[in-house]
Length: 518
Image (cartoon, rainbow, N blue to C red; front, top):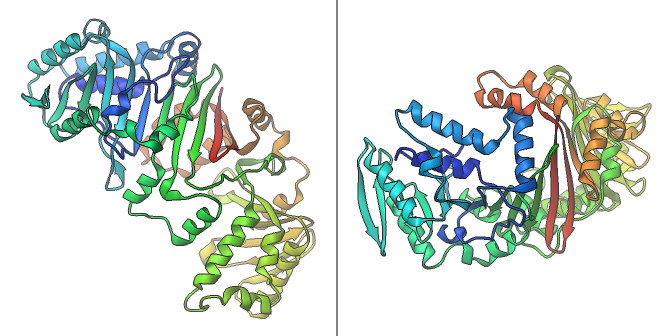
């Protein structure tokens, strides 16, 4: 978790305001100001927006704050909390007289790199309407601090460095800049007068897709994070992604947060780094899943993805049992043609149900264009039983297939069954059979699912979470020692549903997430 450690008194409060209060005006865009020019080239995450939302946006921000936190004005609430915090630390701080006169419209927050798997301390830039008044504020606050600070000059820019963490603060051009160290402040000076994140083509193309009227725009260099995390993505996964037109090393993403009076909307776009973006409407499949699912996800093109994965796995082999190019030939001799099976598969969905550890279950459901998949399930079950594989038993009656019992799987078996144009792989027999039916009580008949579909509008739904049901399960599973969850619980209780819709826009994969508020 990112921690902001600014030890120069009250400057930490301004930093917190920039992070918590980042918003957007009626025409906000992540590239709207020049705050990305302070971020070093290759920065992994950048957030930018307006500090002073107006009109409908402000009304919606305050409406969301009222529902989640019971406050009338988010801005007034944040300022009150900052002043109270300063008072508790023995400081006198009046936002209206010390900060408001020079505070600009926009703020930017940049995270340059990963350190031990976590984002580094942020660089924060806040626009100023009066650089001299901003400098006076810095001088006053650092002079009153019990922790000494020193004056530093670099490339014509004067700034302060001090406190137990040796944080740095100063005015660069017409912006207040707060850095975690002298070195990082100098890097911001260099970026502002040379090469910066704002100059990078990948950043410019990604942030151009940010939505207007957003509360905050968030840029993420997905490829950079993967690289700095030690490239922790398996070769098989990488090949599957690349075969789907996704180059993870080149991927970027932008999320725009848009408050509504009854909802929080997040628009996402991702430049996948490949030639194409996956597409397909899976809303019918998702809506046919069991009504008691607390979470469900559907995705298109499963057959194509599986075929690529099988080809890659066959090429590399499964040591020590199977060498390269032996997997498909071995199964084909046993009557299981993986290529034909994959070619017959279409879309897939996953759902989860249950209210506690004892009844937790779920299944993956795959649609098929013909009987190849159903025949393969029956053939594979016969093959496993004929080979005397421990724990394998036949399933018959409402559907045909087999189950696998094993102590490592827990008290429930993994069940593989097929019927008609569907096959299901479930944890437990009941979820697998529920996934096959596609009839009776389904998600499409529930009020919260209907609300999610309506909120997404023309964007086809591809994922759904029932807020109360998911929270009830989490309360049963999360121990009290996980303080962060239990502190967030009062806010999570206000979420009635989460709906996600997906689509494509040329080489961009797009998505819309909407959280409905009670």
